[in-house]
Length: 197
View 1 (cartoon, rainbow, N blue to C red):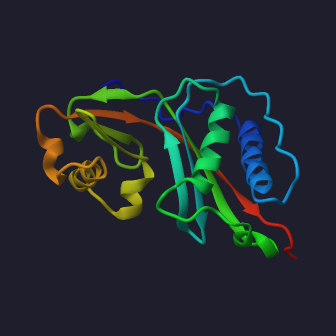
View 2: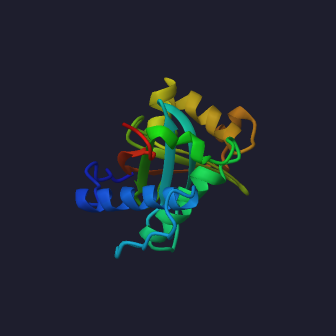
């Protein structure tokens, strides 16, 4: 595997802030805190995978994304923000009460580099590489931070990834398993609801 660019940074700090504000404004609109849907920022980036994550007091509240896409980055931000808030089936849809009175949510964007195939899981760099496991029609993905947050080794991560893909834990060890890695540009902000002091 060719060494990826560890400083892969397609989204400038001003654009990061603009996209985070757009996510926040979308949620305020959908929750009824504002009357009009926010205008989309004028952003030229296209074809970048994206995950949007919401957390409350450090705990996951929603996370939805795509590892590849043909749509523009701003369209992805719109779609994934609303999906993470209202369509992550692990959680109830976000409710206005969760932000009223100045309550807060952490909002995170993870922009993905193009996928790169590898032949051996020993090439995976924990904390740097996100991983995609594909076996037939089954696919699972973990962002780079997941194994670090959970304290997993590479084999344990792969067992869990196989399970996430709906397969037996050790299925990734067979010859037909395909592995791809990617890097992320990760940036975050805070959403504070109305009514706080």
